[in-house]
Length: 451
Image (tube, rainbow, N blue to C red; front, side, top):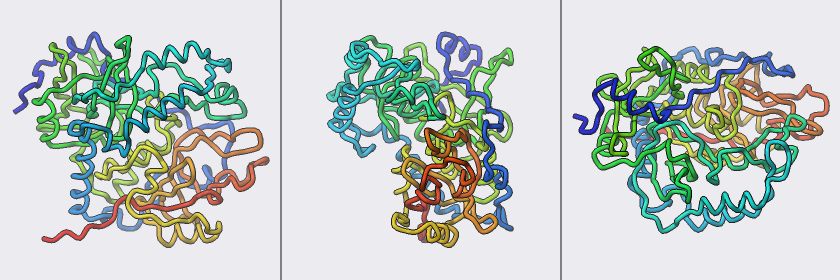
């Protein structure tokens, strides 16, 4: 029985009228790009093309999945039980040193002009982190950016990055990640102007807007932890108001409590604390967590993200390379860190740092488990799909290929080989994926579980 659950749909819309609870996801961009890549035309852009003859055979036994799912949920809810940032392998000293180094940097605004130091100093002062604050449990109400400083506009490390010169990624230097509805938080302190709150999620720490979160009392946290869990298996699942207008879109891989087929969504109650309402999404949008890890389910998940535009740090409700792999494995109860480098050390790992291109190619095909192996290179992570015409096929969300003076832009989630962009004139030396991969890793290893 839910002690703090809103029963009335009318009350739900009244409560949420003053605060937009969920950010609508950006529309999927057309697959057409300014440049055609041979690999994207050659490799099938659908997960089903890479399925083995037995698509329903378990990649990992479900008993082992349940063990992993328990660990997933422990990490997911860690912000509610931790008194510091140790669950992130992070101390406040390290965090504060990082912010201090950012505060000394020169940034550029979107027009390529140097951002005034006086303005940056004011932002830093407004967002002083109180390392002595005792964290309180909280929950995300609406999708929001997680920022290094309490400032919503993008700042860039160089003029070229600010202007996107030569196809360069407009990488917002303040964007850490995003938070999603229902995500547990540790709440530390508010900014001086009270518009931002410093929080820690299960994967990262930073500033979010005050309107996007709410504190959670013991009744709420107990209910959320103990309830049966479901996971969204479709992407951008729309939520509509009583008039049929879409007011939200939920991302594939989002884990939420459920009750009798309905998902339990957090809202801000009249007392300011988190409450919950019931929402039944479209048929087939959510399934019990974890989803059986089979090639068929893996291919379906890949197809749900195929072609999605690239979004650094989750900007505009999109994904970058590591948020894509994280959402993919979340369906199957496998916890991954947020950063691509950290992801490459999840589970077991085979180093390819000193291998030749031929040895790397052979190792991936020989040792890689299709749909269950990550391939890493500095700054990028990919999912191994299996061999295709004798070459390793990968699924990844990538910005592009390095060329003289900038980047040849891909800018979306695609299936390719490890020689993506080989045919492009002016390609930078040793810039192919096969030249730069340094490891393959296996986030999920089999446990021996006694009967």
